[in-house]
Length: 264
Image (cartoon, rainbow, N blue to C red; front, side, top):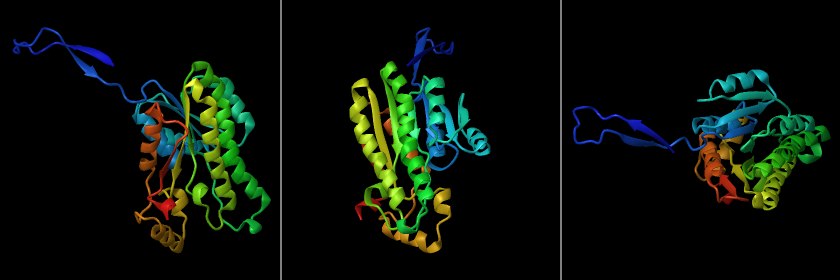
């Protein structure tokens, strides 16, 4: 807390000459966060929420133009952008060597692909798994040594409701996101003794560029199978991420934010 001295108005004789006003700093004041997939969608929404809560955010994505535009939407600062491919081990080697003060890692980068497995090109399957799962594993590995040294940290992995219940045409995607849940549970046990918390958010269908490309029939089916009968928002995912970033006793958990879809 900050204690700021105030001088009362001279006409208010009954007040003491000096008094203090207690100002509570933002929830993430002084924290350094790295958010992959931070140039759009869920990653950008989380980055904006963290910035508003006082964190210094490092946005990671492949496209430099999108990153520059995303950086302009963040409150406060200083914030940084770094172009990189999360499935590239060399990128994470750079992070490990250069970024030693990361307090919060959010693994939000991901790609989707929907087709029957027997009709899916093996290169597409590899891209989905490498980005969604291996990128998440590499990211965790890159920051953990410094988090252990500093005796604290927070990792938030973004999975998907498909990782819980699967779905026709989503075999590779569902497998990669189910792997993220398994990674979260195992890693929470490994690094919890070092005061490092690892949790996951499991979104349902969220209003992003991904859902903008859905056909009318696909959208109608999505809404009909979601009990709340609507898409979620990036702000609703970001609020879950902010909870996980600030609640010191939540570890190894999966917060499902899917409008009830996984209950069907």
